[in-house]
Length: 301
Length: 301
Image (cartoon, rainbow over all chains, first blue to last red; front, top):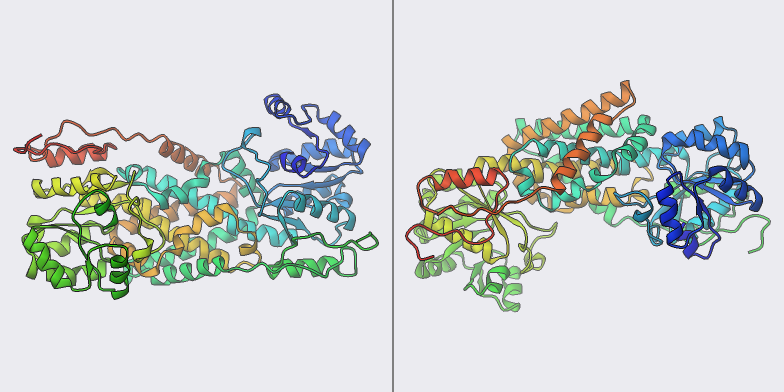
């Protein structure tokens, strides 16, 4: 709400928490704790609905959308895309749905944890699955750009594999690190930068971590297997040759490659042109991002 | 050197890198690339020698110390304490040695990576093994306090177990995270805060990471086993019940406990009094720290 309003958009919102709604109102935002009221208003003004609920609450929320505002353009900011798409299809809302995922956040939640500049400079994934509607896609792209993000076009399954590797696995590693240290006398007393950084995301509310990890179970299992394999091999190296060279050198090389990772700008694709979805998915896979709005077929400039 | 000089101490230093020495001199510090020259001078003025070399270079360095300045008080800032003590004993320098480990640093190395305020507010472990000399112990305590740190007294083996849990394990987890993600298309493109934080220390020079992990092999194997066990159980939870509740909830609880971890000040122990070493080790184990200098038996207040 804050980022949309700061970009000059008309924004109104619903939250089930009366406290959250009151806090938003106190800050001058147009918020309500009446879900059907907000959805009726969305249907009246043909709003773009942005779903920002934990995964377990999605199905019930979509039931209301399907009943009250079934024709609105629909997106979400949930951290898994395959599982969301499945629920959206079950509720037969997929014709007007384009999934989204801004890769930004804090370890805190609730109204007070927000910030109009939260999304500035962050990647915002917009799904380019086989049948996405070009008009809704363009609407979601504009929202992300208005909030200061750049857009990464990606298929839902490819997003989820990447999210497991760079978001869900780090959460589980942080939890494991915190638990391991908690058993060792002196550990908390000596903990410094590497422990603080390595466990920062373990401060995230457990329900949120569980919701995103458990909704991406298939991809996360693969990432966990890979991490366990690497750590087990390092452990064997220590026991047999006394060396962790293999893991340390490849880890360093990977991190340096990440630091110099380049994001070429995607230009020249017209949304709605033949093969525009697979073209954008390929460009996103190669690291490409959208920093200024792509044209839409049949629209002015 | 910077922190000692900022505290008003007379400081001079040796480095094998001519570039490093020239950079330090350019900044107004008294530095040389003549090791024996620096050690002869230390012997002349009865200096406290601070060894700041990677573990693999220690033995050769101590050979010089034993030959040129065997009676100087001696400490180190190397990240493992048991292995250092063993090498010091081999060189028969243990009578005037008290191990140290300031828990501060950056992912960078060399003269330019330093900062006079690097140690401010950081824990600085000072070893209280069975036979440490009280006068040298007090000298090292004063150095740490002068640099703005607080002192955590700890036995070498207990330090190493804690260091494995809060420093060496986080490095290996960061390396594993970076390697896992490097294989996944889109991962670097989507990487945000949790990946950046979780891999920050993977940017550390591989030789430094290897030196500290490999010198603490016994303790680190235990930490790795624990982490692998936790991750494997989470992986099984995902596969069987779809839940990662156990790891996520215990990780969150551990991190919250760390955030509210209290460091009571150690008062009332006199260095050199009967049982002073075991008294300080017990206080350190309970989270206690020294924030202002403890008195030394037989010295003025």
